[in-house]
Length: 264
Image (cartoon, rainbow, N blue to C red; front, top):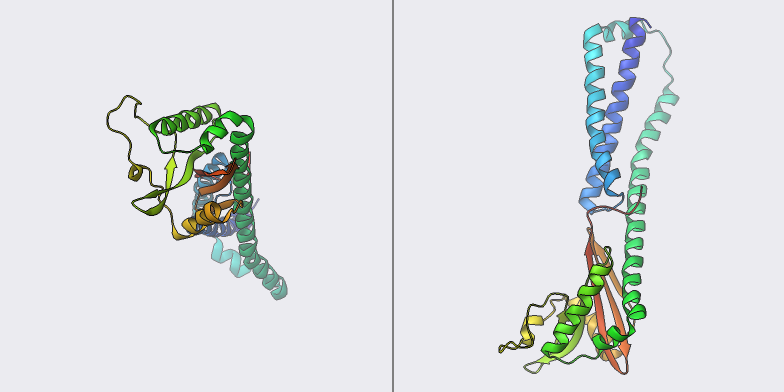
């Protein structure tokens, strides 16, 4: 391999590295700006580390060019004809890669969201189907310390049974000082039935947005049985209504994950 070939090879490596770096940076910015969760943890970490490899190739090709100092000489004596049409086609191809990357990223995020929705729904169904007795206990709401403690115990057992079990809150409708409120009970409760200070409703008010309150109102007042699923920047939420013997509760599942579901 002569000096001219070495210079040409180093130029190819350098240009390829620059293009890869541009695409990698575009991918990284798209993921961060839109909060996309595409690949699993190992693939995500590999992606970030690959940027260092690309930079190493760029530096290496630059050093080779500097060592031989033949770039200008190679260009001066290069009498090969330039194919303008071919150059335009290559440029167009390089530009079209950007929307292709965006399609892959948003498609991967959509698949991750769909998988998460299925997981949350399966978790809700497992509570109902595999724990009929406990499900009936949950739906038989009355504001008392025994109900709060029993609900916490049931949810605590479920969360420790399955490592992938998300956070779950039992939402019920109640009233406080003449106003309708939604109370939420989870697996955290430190009280004791022997305590002299009894729990207060205001301590269990479930914070909601207007859209969530409108949905809960339709569930408890208009007999709406539709699920409500929402995902945003790695946060996943599912409202799952459950009715038994004329009584109704909503199982609220929430989970967060830093990485996607695609990959090995």
